[in-house]
Image (cartoon, rainbow, N blue to C red; front, top):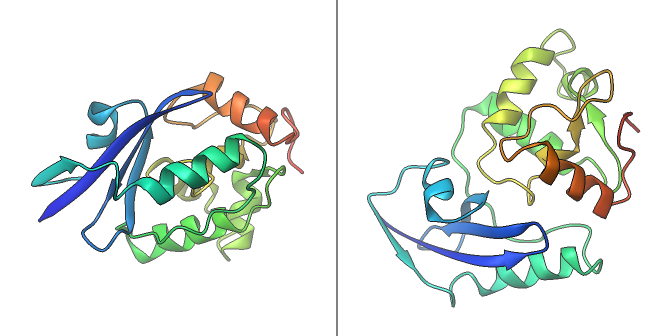
Length: 166
């Protein structure tokens, strides 16, 4: 199946997006095509900036402080549990954080903080599905695939409490 991608600059460095033929976002990554390919499987992927224009626009608005919620069509593949966790991530308001335990309680699995952490780590659509808003119980910035520095930059951009959950 043919899929499409583009890479563009952001204040935190290059950002890449992969889209299916219908325009649904299937993966994103901080970095280029190599980092993006680690997040999903594609038989054939073609660069197409025109198909990614809406993603580029919303990401630019986010970094310009004019967007707090993304409206892009999403098409991530995952288990029902992963999809529940990713949906819960999208409900964390801009400028707020949650701990893994808080997220576990929200999805109705209060004893599953580790499983929540794993589902968070496998989120293929970083930033748009805001896995960066989940922090450790002690306020640590753990568990972000692209490193603590980018996670801190994103949380500071959102004026989110760094070092404690909201």
